[in-house]
Length: 117
Image 1 (cartoon, rainbow, N blue to C red):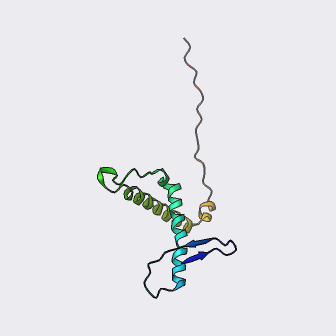
Image 2 (image 1 turned 60 degrees about the horizontal axis):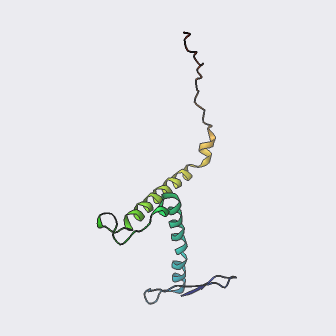
Image 3 (image 1 turned 180 degrees about the vertical axis):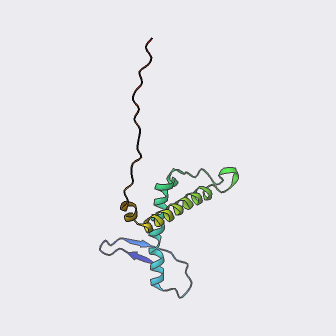
């Protein structure tokens, strides 16, 4: 499949192994969903430290696959943060601003002078 950005003339090529009879519209929708996945990985890199991870070979910690554990944990943390954000957005910022929070009272102590010698 060949995609071209309108107005720019830039082309992108995608190889598909889709079942026979798959419509061009379905293929275009699937190819377009790639950007959402890339944005997800970019956010995970910034928010959960995925950009700090470097693959150092085929086997990672104790001989297990070196890529899967950190990426899986990072994506799980990213999904958790997204769920928390969505829940907070449902509550609405208006609820948080409706009742201004009172500052706790602080006591000030007078400085004590050391005893005279």
